[in-house]
Amino acid sequence: MIVSEVMTRDIVAVQPGTSLAEAAHWMVRHHVSGLPVLNDEGHLIGIVTEGDLLRRPELGTSTRQANWLKGFMKTASLAAEYTHTHGRYVGDVMTPNPVFVRPETSLLKATELMLQKRVKRLPVLQDDALVGVISRFDLLTKLADKLVDRLEEVDDVEIEATIASAMKQEPWAPKTGVEISVKGGIVKLEGCVFSEEEAHALRILVENTSGVIELQDCVEIAAPAPRMGQNAD
Image (cartoon, rainbow, N blue to C red; front, side):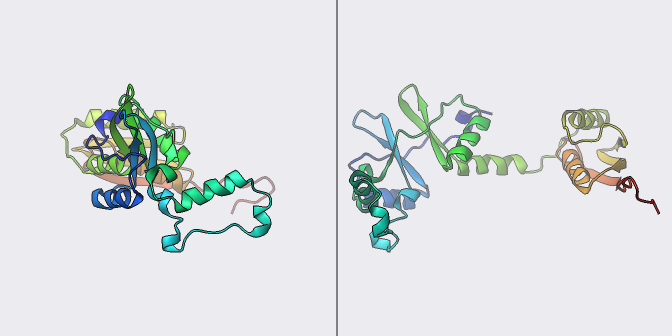
């Protein structure tokens, strides 16, 4: 899947001169954790998020650096910190030059960026124009839709082949020792694996296969082989 299939196209954006009061109001009203910031030409120049508003004197959450630490900090750094915690406009606190994605970016890449950058949303640019925003909530919405069980009529032979193929692709899955049989969409697993983790993952693999109605799990966990010098009872 790609970003354009999931992103929100109804965009709420602000400008650097927008007051923080108004920006906070928009976040609350639209239930979003951040807003893209556009200049007068409509180009993306930043993003303001709820994280930018956590340290505020109005909430008693802005912290002061210890005097001894201030001595090691440049005046410019101290001034910049004060601006960020006491600013009244979006331009004072926003994160400039935010990470963005394109409509054709894969969901895998977008998700990796969110995790790496520790952000909840990413602007979506088409050329230089902001065309959407993709957020963790958008991904959750799509996931919730995908997780809804949809019963499909799939041939038993196809179900068995799909499970066997999936097991071959997973490095953790047993390549031998487990037999699969399917009758009327009911899958029966028999055999032996070497850990509960393998058994659990195998159950999930089967349950995620289209057409599976029920799983009869008869897989056993093999006892670990005795170490050298130990007697097997």
